[in-house]
Image (cartoon, rainbow, N blue to C red; front, side, top):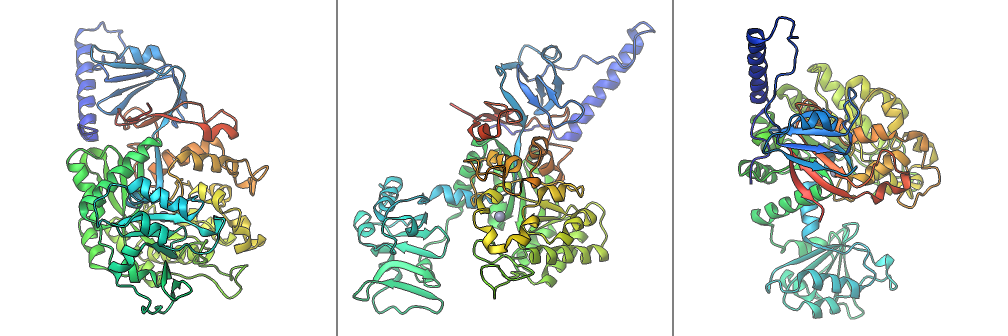
Amino acid sequence: MNRLVNRPLDQTNRHTLAAVTLSIALSIAIAPLHAPLHAQPSAAPVDLIITNARIYTVDDSRPVVSALAVRGGRVAFVGDARGAMALRGAQTRVIDLGGRTVIPGMVDAHGHVAGLGDALAIVDLVGSTSVEDVVARVVAKFDGKSAGQWIAGRGWDQNRWGDTRFPAHDKLSAALPNNPVILTRVDGHAIFVNKQAMALAGITAATKDPEGGQIIRDAAGNPSGVFVDNAMALVRRVVPAQTRDEVKANVVAAIADAQHWGLTGAHDAGASEQVLDIYEELGRTDEMRFRMYAMISGGRTESAMLDRLIAKGPRSALYGGTLWIRSIKLYADGAMGSRGAALLDPYSDDAKNNGLLVSDPAFLKAISLKALKTGFQLNTHAIGDRGNRATLDAFEAALKEVPVADHRFRIEHAQILNYADIPRFAQLGVIPSMQASHQTSDMYWVGSRLGVHRLPGAYAWRSLLNTGVVIPNGSDFPVEYVNPLISFHSAISRQDANEFPAGGWYPEQVMTREEALKSMTIWPAYAAFQENELGSLTPGKYADFTVLDQDIMRVPTSLVLKTRVVSTWVGGKAVYEAK
Ligand SMILES: [Zn+2]
């Protein structure tokens, strides 16, 4: 495979500059005196011309055009067909898009790439309707796997079945007699395993329940196949760790899946040292046809691993502009669904529980200082209002000691904010990196967790935008579906796919379509220090774009989710084309 972009930016600029200088010199030498010196030099032919399209450039100087041209992996021209065709040469590929829609390549500003790869590799049990359905799905995906290999799955929820008791292992054991099977419940708090898995783990009727865990048993006291909370470790400890080859295969599959959904890049919200190494390998071998903005997974305490990666310094646009390693990911608190998000006041449905800070505020400040001193960006997960305040406090204290003008520190999620903290993002220059699809996934139950009085500060996009910040959008895949148009739809409607609730949930917080488009293109680019390289279809930037079968800027809101990706282009090359 060819490298996406053969010429780094500085080289391209040098060539262009040289051509312009040469052309000016020639025109002075041979043209009549009245010839304007600013006449366009006859540029080299372009590689690709797109015509007959409705192209949203996300560039305010020319917001909508009908044609674009690509040279050397970068946008060479935007405008009309006549202007584009003037750049045509013998080798130029010309594509008439038949009126289809083009937008700059969508970038998911918060996803988990290896996590998506893992999710794609295991059996998807979300929505399964019975234990028989679970067994059938496992058999369908893994029949023929060699004996002894572990089989994993995730997503079952017995509360959705006709029989809501925990399942028993006998059918699963009978269907897969030669492989150990481990199937994680939808919430991650229980596993369902077969006889072979229990045998390998040495589990018998005599095995005692560990503290904080439960082995579900039948009437005779035998383990029935389900292990809850801390009991899960009794089986998990014998599951072999993934090999590097397996991790790499999953990463490659995740990138392909993202491209399929129209993404040309992603911000990986916490990559391990091994995954970073795999990204570098994919970059070196020209297999990374994607803009990967990888955040280093910083852990919960100071670590030699983090220091090792920081010591390499911030690195941008590696391997032909396919990999950036210049940011660190931390966690301030947990998540709302499990009441782990840290709140200033207790949960409305759990009066003694304020959630928890998972990192010591002193650690958040220490890493903030380290990042400011070394030129790294710091992106901290914070969901509850107390988690967000603790993070803003840590950032503020660190910035007071080490003032850096253009740090672009981010809070990932920024979901529940105390009103007093909303203006602090703009004041401190902190970017709220939010996932619009979380709002439409959580709205059914978040009111009972928070009480009505806190909801005006929840998913408060408009309140934040009004202070002057930008909001890079994402999905948090594989927590939510990869399809970026789900977050686009949520952003403009605050409604689910069935247009619930009528009028939208706290509709005063919606984004306009123009803002929602920016939240998937130029704002993620800004949040990754890439706005001069990507995020809009502007001459000189990478030719990353997505072709859609309908116009998401004009179709009724109810039709947005029916949009299909026709093709995805990175550096002027198709990385996905619908059949
Ligand atoms: Zn995440």
